[in-house]
Length: 224
Image (tube, rainbow, N blue to C red; front, top):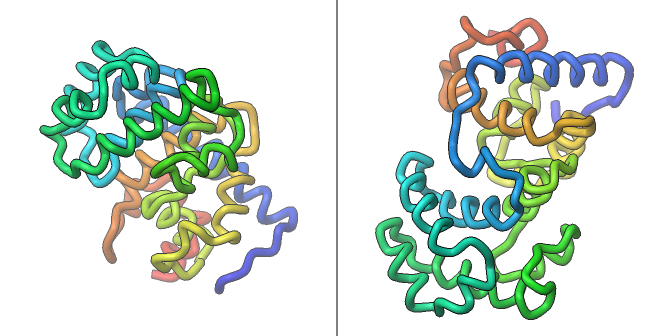
């Protein structure tokens, strides 16, 4: 199956997923410093640092960086080489260039504030679908679908959809995620889905279905 009928049954399922994720989040949501802020600048810095890097590796570097550079203007003022030095421990050195170039553009074009517009965000150096969505959802609490391999995996299993490398850019998955987060608190339910994928709906052929509160509506589980 690789289609969805957006009927009453579908939206009932969306509501159940949302409700169960929010209940699960009350006891299980992970705590990170970038989740304790709604400052779009801090969200953007975190997302750049987190690219291909585990959260535990990023935490200390992120906290020190934010103290030293509280906004985009301070990054530009410090200069490219200083940013490279402060991010050296994370590896993937292109990230320091990306962050510096982003800061220059935000300062030059938008007076130091990230625009509240997905198309404008995606015109910036290194900002693609995921980072732009994360800035809008986590920074502005807007119902913007945050799709990665983890969120796609959970939704794909629940709805019985084929999951491929291109699913993160799929209109089908985008639509499902949009329906899920299209309510008053998209930020929390998005964090919950990410953490649920990390703790319960894990990769591989044996997710932790025995502790999953969504298994009764999950096609993957029902077809085991």
